[in-house]
Length: 357
Figure 1 (tube, rainbow, N blue to C red):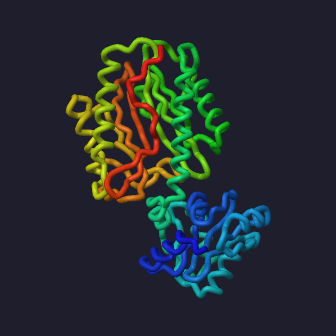
Figure 2 (figure 1 turned 90 degrees about the horizontal axis):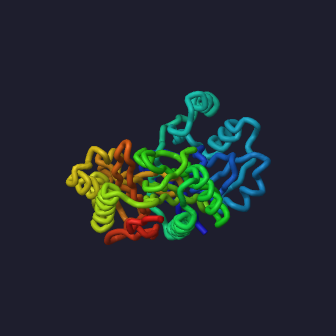
Figure 3 (figure 1 turned 30 degrees about the horizontal axis):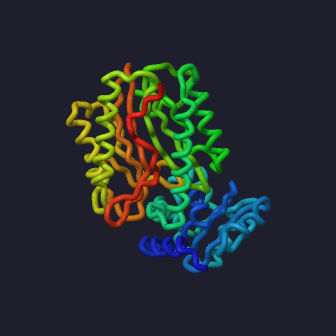
């Protein structure tokens, strides 16, 4: 069966007037080939699709990289690359300049001469923005696991345990239920630390009558989920309820109105305008959301700086927040797919104001 991702990449190469591209990034390599080994290079030409790897991965590569010609590269990979480029009569080679350090570039420049190296970062990432049905099915599984993890945590969160203990509990639960790992360093931020937007779990002992913000996700079969829920332990104050209700209103308003054809800037304003109207605009200092897929932060961005037009097949987070130093903060985050008419949620955990007595 033809690899549609390779076909689309070749179309992108043609638009860039490139004869071939060398893929060195691990995530892009897996996206194109399905190969999960830790070492390999992908060379796509107009006619050929090669996966170069070393002796350790030859069997694995042949099993995973369907439709690719598997090549065991020489001790110096550039020797093998140069030979393949000569066979294909390639004179203009794209490479992932954002993934290649300067010393490696200089080596390529010398060893692959006279082939001209052309920066081509973003070509594969541009394909990854649009998720196919297979990808969306995996991402739904990852989202479901995140939802189950949150439900699990509601039964064990209590005063007297540390944030690190709770983060470990979350990660163990996800791993036991199929995750390769967490999508990123789990954020458990309680009390005044919940005002830190990215306050990863610490030794702080969780107390009563305070927020506990949980931002986490599962990496499952190569794809990430990313969810945030904020709860109160003990007795909430009026301020707890006030800022929670504002963030929830902003998030629900965004989910209701988010649609294809809207720019990232317009999507960001859906949440930001609500929070600003209540006087907390200065306490919402990050963007409303970001793309999600094989990496936890991908294109597009729901940001006041983004003019990217949202289109069906894109997966984004929606995560407004309010952060009050010395008191605490709230963020509520879901993963959603942009559809032909609006969105479809992947994460489905309750967002009701939750108090754990």
